Image 1 (tube, rainbow, N blue to C red):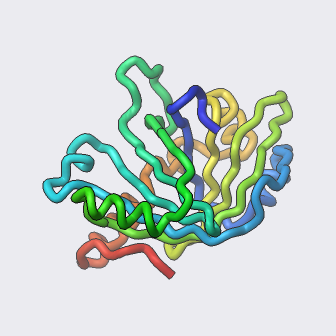
Image 2 (image 1 turned 60 degrees about the vertical axis):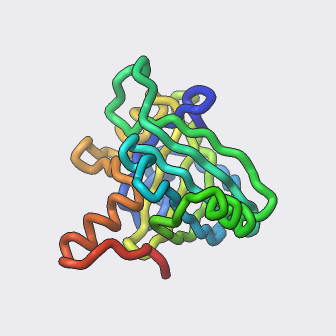
Amino acid sequence: MRSDAGHEIEVKLRCQDVEALRGAGIGLELERERHFEDNWLFDTADGQLRERLSVLRVRDAGGQGLLTFKGSAAPDAPPSQFKQRVEIETAVGDAAEMVAILEQLGYRKVFRYQKHRTVYRGLLPGGGRLSVMRDETPLGDFIELEGEEAAIAEAVRLLGVTPGDYILESYLGLQAERCRAAGQPLEDMVF
């Protein structure tokens, strides 16, 4: 769910399951059952996308291919306590073929990450809605809350979490931090 076309607002939280949300009064409707996702991030050989704080991703989500561009929030976007990005996404017929096309165009794979994801529609007591994704990753389990600023703010308030609990890093950023702490080069985040 995006706050407007091509713009996403989200926050990650460490969480073992979604029962904490239900316990906080957030209703959950299953939107997509648990499924495996395989993701590849691409960049140019000289790192132009990284320099622009942008990402080009191909995702295979249980046989459904998605091509996504993510970039920095628009300069006129209102400030947010959560992660804001431009996001443009479209379905592709075959994720492996999309990977091959990008490689033929000169893009190179820079990072691969995998997760099991379950998607819910979150229903807030105040009437707001948001997308809730439970991600089981090699780094642990996370909940992503995505939607309008006010809906995410209400959800984190109900959960009793503070800005110190927010994770605004991408999975690439979290994996890079883990690898740095272990004194090793960046490696893919795969099972």
